[in-house]
Length: 289
Image 1 (cartoon, one colour):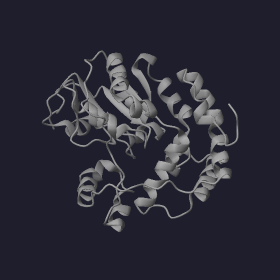
Image 2 (image 1 turned 60 degrees about the vertical axis):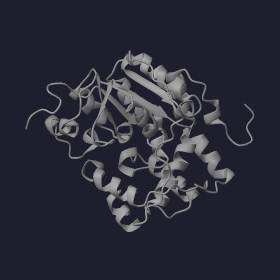
Image 3 (image 1 turned 135 degrees about the horizontal axis):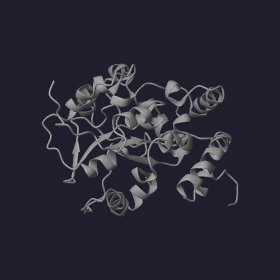
Image 4 (image 1 turned 180 degrees about the horizontal axis):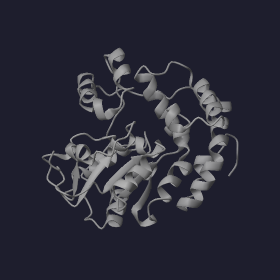
C-alpha cells in the first residue's frame, strides 16, 4: 500500500471533549486553506481496540486529498480513551493537540440527550448520574463505562497529554468562547499555530441535534467503532436529517448539587492548569460566589 500522506504525518489532532463544539470547529477549519482533513471527521484510529500501529491504513483516510500545512484528525473520543495520548505521541510527538472544554454539567446533559435520542438510554437523568458516580468511585474508567459523568473529568484526561506533549503544542479552548466569540476564538488558535486568520461571514453552529428515524439500526451502529461505521452513520443521519428542538431534562436540585460537588476537585485542578476562572462551572445551587 502506498503512503497516502507521501511520508508526512497527521500533525493536528482535536481530541475532544465530546459534545463540546468539536464539530463546529471542524466545520470552520475545513474552509481554511492551510488544513487538510480526512474523508470522515472522526477517524478513530488511536481509539480503536485492539490497536495495531498500521499507519499506512490510517493515512489511507486522506487518500486523494491535497496535502496542506496542517493534516488534521478530529476525533473527540481520544481525550477520554486511556491509551490514545500515548499512541499519538508514539506516532508523531510533534502533533499539536486541540482540546475543547465545556461546563461538565452542561456537557453531561447534552451527552445524556444524545443517548436518549439514539435509543441507548431510557433511565431518568438523576439515575444515570447516580449510577455513573458510584461506578467511577469504584474505579471504572471513563472509556470503559462510556460514562456521561466521567467524560467531564477533564483534568485527569488532559494530564495524559501534558505528560507527553510540550505546552506549546497543547491548545485548550472553552466551548463558551467558541459560541460567543467565534471568530476571535478560532483566530487565537490559528495564531498559536502560526497560521493566517480566518474571516467568518456568519456564526457557525454545526452538528445540530437530530432524531434518527431508524432508531433500532442507529442503536446498533452507534455502539460500533466509528472507524468501521462512519459512512453508514452519515447515510443514516442524512436519511433522517431534521433538526429538533431539544428540551433540557428535568434536573432536580439534589442531582445538580451532586454533580457540582463531584466535579469540584477536578475543576480546581483544571483551573490551576488553564489559569481560567471556573467559578461558574463550580457554582452549587444557592451558593453565593
